[in-house]
Length: 320
Image (cartoon, rainbow, N blue to C red; front, side, top):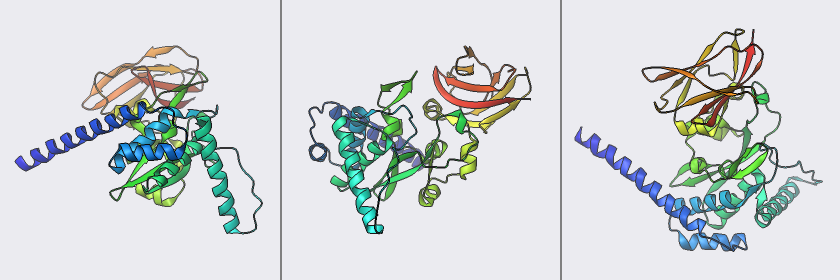
């Protein structure tokens, strides 16, 4: 028992120490100004920080803070490009040239879409000699996507290998969010070293290797889930029922959503439709499960749940 207690407190101490360490990295990066090239940025990061984890965090924070998301569709990689090629080597060469162009445009304009964010991060890691990979796949942001299989990849993020362990980051999602059609730049470190359990709720890698590594469920099951937002991930809660993105309800009859391990001080509100009034949800708690009662709905609509005023989950509701 004593050994277990020691290990437990040592783990807590180590985690706290790492958080403090990364916060210090962020403060230093926020002081950076007048960076004129990717090479200059990489050299400065390499000089200011010692460990690979610190350097990776520095690149992540700089990109998330300084690159503005320029597209009104937050789930688009980039416009499709057409290449005339003669063989596979020629294709690889032209893709490399095109990617380098995207990287320079993203850095120089301080704006881009997810591909620009991920390629820029990839470039900096390569300059720092840190093993990393680009991950192409799918994310969902609209209820129209619930229940529908994607036909094209719509997102790209990064994986970094530190001490023979892969960690995942999404600098695009970390850089801000849309609010009433306007992009708000706000760094969210939640998307640095995303846990596998959280990542598989929101990201579906196209490559089988990454699917297996995070134990991702089949694509159809992923697409049938509700839309999961940052507030839900940050709550550390788990959805019990309904765990499908489409809720079938009887007309004008209330129904419940059950959530496990929700913090007792979490206030929950909900809204029917995109323009409906936000209402306070009636909650009952039994053991670790919180039941959220939704009043009756009289027609097909969307349902949005808020944790402490932040959007957490979205569903389609089909009324019988």
